[in-house]
Length: 490
Image (cartoon, rainbow, N blue to C red; front, top):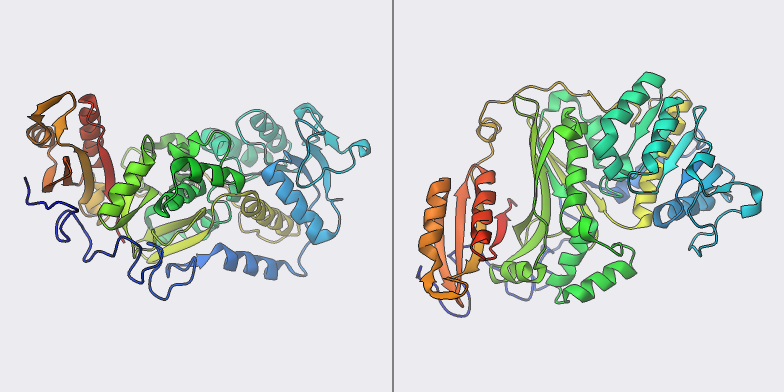
């Protein structure tokens, strides 16, 4: 069926890229994501977080001192921030109060003397009123939400790395800040050390953002990278936990919820659309990430969990997607290694802009929190501060044509679909006729078909991504466990 051959797919079939690289790596025989002559982390797209951090630090030399602050949470991120403050100042006297659950717990960065009265264990004891600067590194909704409300209602500044909090309650908190003269800052909530929020906020409305896409979860990227290197899922997960990239329960990272929260926040900053008005279709790398990687390897590509969002439609709703994608081994997406993140912003008048940087780990996130503190210092000294203006509304929304993909120049897209060639439990029933009927009802074009080791491999093409999701649901209802990978652009 389809002209396949045993031992692998022919180079010209079911492969959207001009050439294949050897199974052992990229065109130079190295890691599948390394282009010839490229240095680690280089992608040729834009400024990395390391360059941004260096420029920020250079600009701050001789500038206004950091303001006094209270710190909610002193775990991986909060402890890293405390360490950076101590390293930079030689003391932690700027941190006037710290909220922790268990002061007796051993930490890489020790707490100030508990007898000095700066360490508290109840959120109600943390002094956040009176225009203070509060840095929140607790995670979760509670008690972070209560602290944010108290801080902003009193005209203070609330700096957070909590993407769940901002995605769910950001519009309420921004409105509260606007009413009281406070400030909500969340550079660290998206991409760890990748300055994508700053890029979008500094971009003028006239640039007209057409699409935002990126690798926004460092944990899942690290895990996929380890699988591509030949490690098992359990080995990759153990390594990620040991390095501080994965929580004890990494489900939010691997099922795409973390990336979905982040893409909502980027849509809010870029388009002025509240996170609740961003509809995200989400597929993570589960249930079988090792099978996804094996599928990509057979096709000469790499799996990456990509998120993207387009401008709002006429009803003010943004459509976003988080899904595993098949990318060429020589693409900048494949070049994102380990726990790094990368975001690409396509605009009508400023071309394509990108930023990259570490997307997981306490140090990267703490550096972003420190950047927001530096902005607050500039604001209090009478400067502008990079993130001083409010988030919503900040963009003039121009409703696109009804077919937004055509209006913004996005072409039809392709998906690679792999599934068993026979109905489970019914080896006499071929899957292909049923698949063709399902695709016909969904008005999806079947570009190519091949058989390999009993599996049916196809390439689907459509302008309407939700129809592909529907096909996947119908195939799962037949117990076929389809493996779907969107074929990402270079």
